Amino acid sequence: MEVSTETALWWAVIISGIYHGINPGMGWPLAVSAGLMNDKRTSLVAALGLLALGHFIAMMTILLPFSLMSALFIWEKELRIAAGVIVVLMGIYLLINRRHPRFLARVHPAKLALWSFLAAMAHGAGLMLVPIYLGICGIDANDTGHQAVQTLMAGRLANAVIVALVHTAAMTVAGGVIATVIYFWLGLKFLSKTWFNLDIVWALSLVFVGALGIYGAYAGH
Image 1 (cartoon, helix red, strand yellow):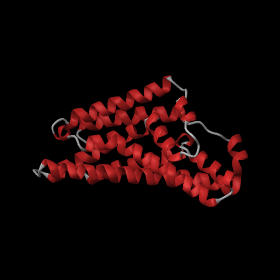
Image 2 (cartoon, rainbow, N blue to C red):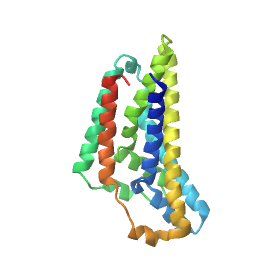
Image 3 (cartoon, rainbow, N blue to C red):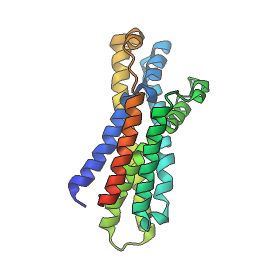
């Protein structure tokens, strides 16, 4: 596989992380609120850290099973197509059902890591990474030739951790920049007046990424 394809997939990991970070639904307004309520900069940083932790765990929860599947080496194309279909269906579901999961409102605001984990799972944030991750694993499989399955699986596990870390870092930086600007200069009043809703864009992006994953599996990318 060409280097340009591998680079594009890793950029997709980063850009999806930035996109998740910008989306208020992933929690940066909660970090702003924590900082303002406690009147401490450290509270803002701590909240961002907890949100990042929850998001990372959610990404690993989705990616880890794929990294441990020995069947992935035999049915790679089929699994990539199936993952793409699931992501598309999730996007369609979110387009039809615009209501936010009610159970998120029942999570105590102090439990930011738990909230972040549940929010990422409920919105399909981890699913968005699956087609990209499987594409990156395909690159590794081609490069390793006839190595043992155990070695390939170890490589896939390492990729799962790296993908989740890079994605979460990009999300945290993007969300942290917005939260910092609002905390230090704009305030919650500005946030309440300029609130933006990315629900439709989020759902469409899932459909797009899923369709791209299906195309990549058929095209051998």
